[in-house]
Each structure stands twice: as C-alpha cells, then as structure tokens.
Amino acid sequence: MKGREFAFRKWHSLLGVIPVGVFLLEHLVVNNFATGGAESFNKAAHFMELLPFRMFLETFVIFLPLLYHAVYGLYIAFTAKNNVTSYTYFRNWMFMLQRVTGVITLIYISWHVWETRIQAALGQKVDYEMMHNILDNPAMFAFYAIGVVSTVFHFSNGLWSFCISWGITVTPRSQRIATYVTMVIFLALAVMGVSTLFAFVNPQLANM
Ligand code: HEM
Image (cartoon, rainbow, N blue to C red; front, side, top):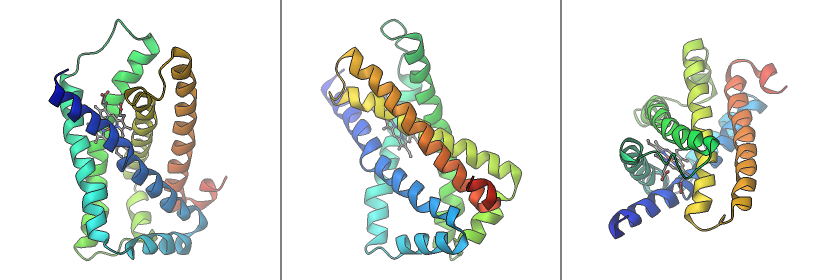
C-alpha cells in the first residue's frame, strides 16, 4: 500500500469509531428513551437540540467525518479484492458483510437524515409523534429495522478490524476473543435499536 493510500485508510478506520461510532452509540441511547414513552423521548431529543454550537458540532463531528468514511468506504467496497486465502471461511463472510452493510447503511442513513434532520431544518417538528407516523407504516418499519441492524452490525464488526488496524489485537487468540466481544456488542445494540423502533408503534412489545 502506498504512503498516501495508507494514510487515507487510517483516517477511514479512525473516523469510523471516533467520532462516527461514538455518535452512533449516543444516538442509540438517546432514542432508546422512547421505551419510557412519548414524553421521555421528547425530553431527551429536545435536550440534544439545545446543545450549544449545534450546527458546528453536527457539521464537524458528525457530517464531515461520516461523509469521508462513506465516500472512501464506497471506494474500498467496490475496489478491494477479497482476501480469500489468508483468513478463515467465517472471516471472509464477515469481510463481505462489512462491505454489504456499509452500502445498506449509506442508503438507510441518507433517507433517515432526509426524513428527520433535513425536515427539522425546513421547520417540521421532529418528535415522538413524527416517528410514530413514519414507523406505523409496516414497509417503513421494515426498512428502519433493516437499516438499524445493518448499521450496528457494520459498527460492531468494524470494531474487530479496527482493533487489528491499530495494533490492539495482534495474536490469533486475542482476535478470536475480539470476535466474541464484538458479536455480543452487535447483539446488544441490535436489541436496543429494534426495541426503540417498537417503542414508537407498540410500547408493550418494546418493554418486554
Ligand atoms: C454509522 C455509520 C458508520 C459507522 C459507525 C461505521 C464504522 C466503521 C468501522 C468502525 C469500521 C472498521 C474500521 C477498520 O477496519 O479499521 C468500518 C469499516 C468500513 N466501513 Fe464503515 N461505518 C459507517 C458507515 C459506512 C458507510 C456509509 C460506508 C459506505 C459504504 C462504510 C463503508 C465501510 C467499509 C467498506 C469498511 C471496511 C474497511 C476495510 O476493511 O478496510 N461505512 N466502518
């Protein structure tokens, strides 16, 4: 890998976790307040809206890092050769799924941002009721469920390769342990994300 490409890859890897991954975690936690009812969600979401320098933070901490990660991610997804010989069968699947979920995540996030953040900028009130109206449509609910599960899989499985990229897991044993840890993270975030979606349409199910 040439020097410049190596640096591009390192930035791509780092930005996927800091700040984009950190934002994803924060976003999942705030939205999960919906399991406590409409008022609880509206309060949590409203608090985020009141953060000082909101536009600045959104642009430099979320939008630009995500844009870089997504654009370079598309380049990697459509140009990188699959590394069939040096990894196990399972890891080749994960390698492929990382790319597929990257593309699904991009489609999902683009739609989600259009439907929520851009509508808010255009003067719409984004609250529990708005999310209820979106998710009440079974097709949209399925789209959101696929999008959320894809995003959290991409993030969790990404943590596994991130740990290798940054020299955190070097030995085969530590990489095997990281597989279990990242899959537990995936399951926990997927349950949390999908229960949040249910909280907007069927609160009893979300609190089971
Ligand atoms: C919430 C949004 C996203 C998060 C939190 C996220 C997070 C991550 C993380 C942590 C990694 C692992 C980095 C590493 O291997 O060192 C990664 C890798 C990757 N991401 Fe994302 N990502 C997101 C969105 C996207 C999007 C929209 C794309 C566009 C296609 C994308 C494409 C990729 C690709 C192709 C890789 C594999 C890189 C490699 O194997 O070298 N990601 N992502």
